[in-house]
Structures are given as structure tokens and as C-alpha cells.
Length: 254
Image 1: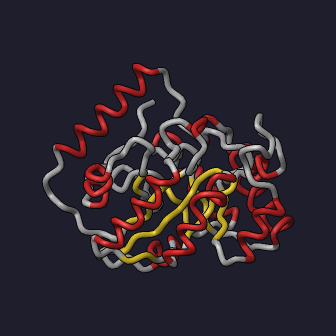
Image 2: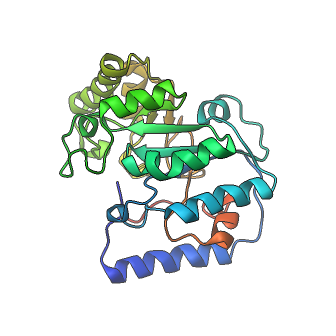
């Protein structure tokens, strides 16, 4: 979900992120799975990237010599090189409206992680902001990888074992029933190490997931795959720093 913070909190968040990028000196060359959310949904806060900015980011990445692959490819075959994958959390309509045309033009594969109850319409915005099942099915038919982002986007660290299992199994079953997909990839809601436990990792395996994505490369829970968050604030120099490892231990403040 978007980071909706008061103005002073937003300023502090940007300042910390800017300081991290500006102070980063040592390049860490590794394949990276990028974590985006919305592209032109300002209500999603700091996680929203303006459409023109998103396109510029991808083109600069290509100009800088990066190649793109799917998240599944990078998760199963990391080579420590200069490959990137693009993923989106939540299932927002603005991704289809503004990001997909750019991704198609540039030939970039991508993954959408879906909150299944939101696809059912169980969100305050209904389907004004979020994709419905027909639209998600059309995405899958166009070759977009679809993964789970849970039933309702909870903080898994606050759930009982039974509730966590329900979220994990239920979202996978819903994706199978509505889209006919045997989904094996899961992105942790909120993404930070504090939102996940060893017990939840075991529950995810029991539910049939083979790959679980977190947020931080260096602070991710054991057994998960790290991603690199790209925020709506990040100017070009900060994105370049992110791809060199500036945010490898970054997690959203609590």
C-alpha cells in the first residue's frame, strides 16, 4: 500500500533516503528485482511514481547497460550481474494505464502481485483505483506474470498461525479459481523483516509457494528474495544509487 504520511514525516523520509543515496560510495553489482506500486495514483503516497518519471527511469536503466528479465528468472538463477526485474505490488489500475505501454514498448517483462480481496472489490476505492478480475485475466493473457500479495494485505506478524494460513492459502486458491493460475510466487505485504516470521515462511511453503519476496536485500527474512524499492521521490541520481546498492539494507520506518 502507499506510504501516506504527514508532511513532516514525508520530509524526514525523503531526507533519510536522500542521505543514504548521496553517501553511498561502494557499488554492489547484483541482479535486482525492483519493487514498484502505482504509476500515477497520487493517493498511494510516496510509493506512487509519476508516469513520465517511470518511463524515464526505465530508459535510463537501459542506457546504463542493464538488461531486463522476469522476477522468477532472477529469483531462481541469480548471476550477480546487471539484470533487473520489474514488479508491482497491490494490483493498481494506473500500472496498466501508464506503466504497461512503456514496458511493452521497451520489451520489459513484469510481474503484478495481487491482493485478491481488493480484486473482488473489497477496498474503500472499489475498482476505481484497483484492477478487477477481468482486467487481471487480460493481463495474464498478455503474458504478465501474476503473483499473490495475500487476501487482504495484513501485517503477517500480527496474525495467528491459522489466520496467516488462511491468507496464504486463500489468496492462492482465489487466483486459481478466477484466473486458472497455479501461483507459486508471493510478495510480503509491507515487505519488511518485522512483518514476517519463520513460522509464516513455513506456512507459505505449506500453502504451495516456492518463492517469497521481501523488501530489503540485506535485511530480508531468511529464505526470502530481496527487492529494491523505487519510491516516488527518487530522482535519477538516487535511482542510480539504488541500483548500486544504496538501499540494500533499507526498510520502511515503523
